[in-house]
Length: 497
Image (cartoon, rainbow, N blue to C red):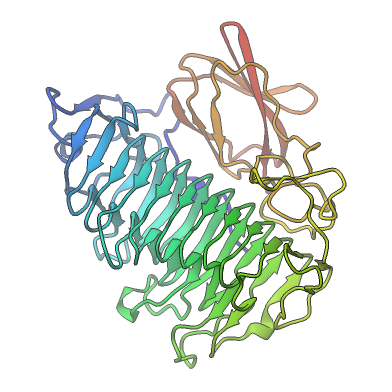
């Protein structure tokens, strides 16, 4: 079972006041103390912020062994992500063996190799770990071949959130993972990619891909597995490309194949909305023929998805050799053809239960790409309940039973807010141990209450980005509140078991 929030410890700064180290701000840029982030990183200590001023920076900047601590993360942050631009060069920054590091508010563009590279330095036993990449822009690579906007190799316990990846290399990925574990991709945008938007291979496991948007996401918008040379597998000797992945509450538009299962096991693709795939709805492949060692692509789930197709499809589903498609589980999907009212859905390799075919999902405004379900949609309440996720593409709670697709019916709202003067963000939600607060006004009174209004946790914010350790809190639904001059904001938060 995928451990959704184990992947999230990795996130922004601890708030235990008695343990936080003295913090310094290291200014980077023209006329500042440090000329570039590499020289600042060499001087950084746990708890410090490397603040990058508006300018154009050309790398590659190599940053090795940058290590914060669980209660004192190191932050690399641009003052304004539209003005702090890493332009050109082979790479922007190359991180080797970082730990407890936040990278936020940067633009990366025009590199001839990988846009940004984070790896374990080849020391497979000591992965890079506890990393957050947040509110960054990756766009317009100047590379050809297999070059990626964000390359992750041997990275554990990480989150990539609120980032935009646009116009990737023709042969590369928006994000490529080799041997990565316990990761979360949340609320990112992938537009006009090459081979893939996201690829997880080389022994990758326990990855969540949740509430993202994919428009023309490449040959395979999400490549669940891949083809990796044996020396690069992490852990060494892994006999699967990827396992225990969850793809949920995403919206896909276009792509040759939005989903590709490639040498993967125990992968769940659940509650997504898939719009007009160009060639295939999904693919089942095995890129290694040596199934005496490498396990065949098997035991995966495709459920609760809305799939809208047109006559552009070459073949509904592509199944390659050396796979075990009969082991797949299909259930409660809605299949609709815009141009052929007699289409009975795809020819699946195993019997589907609870399918809905030949029925328009009745989106709010298809032409405007508003895939919210209207009140008479046949998808409402027709999904199958699964554990491990709770919120839809728009941060609304899925009901029990859930609707089919990435968006629950629009009457259900899981967040409540009043006032918008300071629109702070909370991730992940639901959570298990740690809660990350972004854009929270400093020195603001905050409290968490149960649904009866009893305050169970309170504090004053100490910085705009914080981590709350709520590991001792009982599982359940709570309300997070904070107050500022003339306004109040609140969010419902869900603590999982």
